[in-house]
Amino acid sequence: MVKSYLKYVPQQTFGVIVSGGACFGHDGKSAISAALDQIRVQNLRSGTVLRTIAGHAVSASVTVVVRSPDGVHAAVGFSDGAVRIVNVDTGAVAMTLHGHRRGVTALRYNRGGSLLASGSNDTDIVVWDPISETGVCRLTGHTNAITDVVFLNEEASVLASSSKDGLVKLWELSTQACVQTLVGHRHEVWSLDVSPVAPLLITGSIDSDLRAWSLHAGPAAREALTTATTTTTSTAGAAKEGNETEAEMATASMHAVFEGTFPRQRGTDAVATVRFNADGRWLVAHARANYVEVYRVRSQQEAERHVKRRLKRVAQKANRRKRARKERGEAEEEEE
Image (tube, rainbow, N blue to C red; front, side):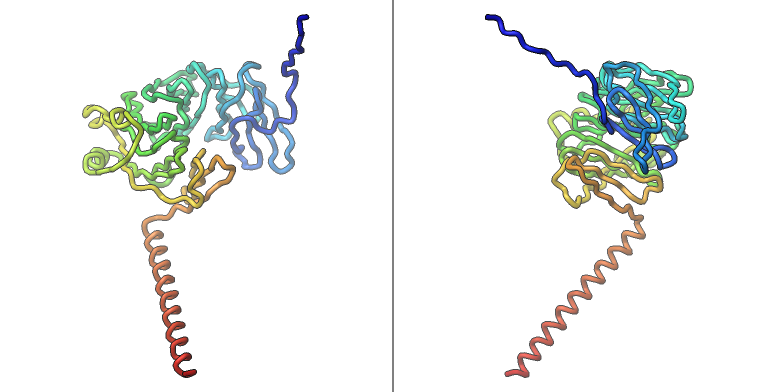
C-alpha cells in the first residue's frame, strides 16, 4: 500500500513587526524596519504603520536598513545581493544597485551622504555613488562574510570593515587597497563604529571584548604605525594577512593603534552592535543576550578629574574606617 502525505507550503504571513534591520526616521518619531520582503515605516508612539514599501522580489527578504544623512532616503539591502535606495516619505524607489552575489549584511553612508558602502556574505565590499547610481570600487580581502563597515573621516577617503574572519581592515579608497589589518579579537568581529568628534574606533566581537583604537591621520599616521608596539593574539594566519606592503603603508592617510580593552558590565555575552550617539558622548553596546550597555565617553581632562574624585572618595572611606577602629579601641579600653 502506497502512503501519501500532505505537503504544506507557506501561504501568508501577518503581524510581522521586524524581521531584519531597523533604524529611526529623521524626526525620531518613526522607525523604518524590515518586514520579510517589505519595508515598513511605523509611528513609534501609536505603533501604526504609516507606509509599506514593497521589495523588488518576493523571494528576497530585507536584511539591513540604514537611513541616509538627509533623512529623506533609506538604503535597503536584500538577501539576493541587491541594494535599493527608497524615498521614506513617498515610498518611491530611487534606484536599485546590483553588485553582490550573496545577501547584503552591512550598509553605511558617509557623513555627507555622497557615498554608500555595502558588505555582503560574498566577502566583498562595494562603495557606491548614489548620486550617479554607479559603483566606485570593489574591495576584496576578507575571507568570510562582512559584518559591518564605516567611513573613518570627513573626506570618506578611508573605510574600515569587520568580518567573521576575526579581522578588521582599513581601506584606502583612492588606491582601493587594504593599508592595515587590525588583529586581536579571538573570534568573529560583529560590529565597529568611529566617534564623530574624536579619532577613536571601537570594535565589538563574539568573544565579548570591546577594543579601542586611536586613529592617526596625515603625517602622524606613518609615525604612529612605526612607533606603536601592540601585542595581540589572533587566529591562525591572521598575522600573515596583516602584513601589508611598505608601499601601501607609506601612501596610507590613516592608521589605527590599539589602545586597550575596556571592561564591560556583563562581559560574557557576544557584542552584536556598537554605536556612538550623534555628539560622541555616549557609546551603546548591544549584546546578543537582549540587553544594552551604555558607556559615557570622557575626554582626557574629564577622565583625570574622575580618577581624582574616585581616589579622594577611597581615601575618605579609609580614614573613616581608621577612625571607627580607633574609637572602638578606645571604648574597649574604657570598659576594661
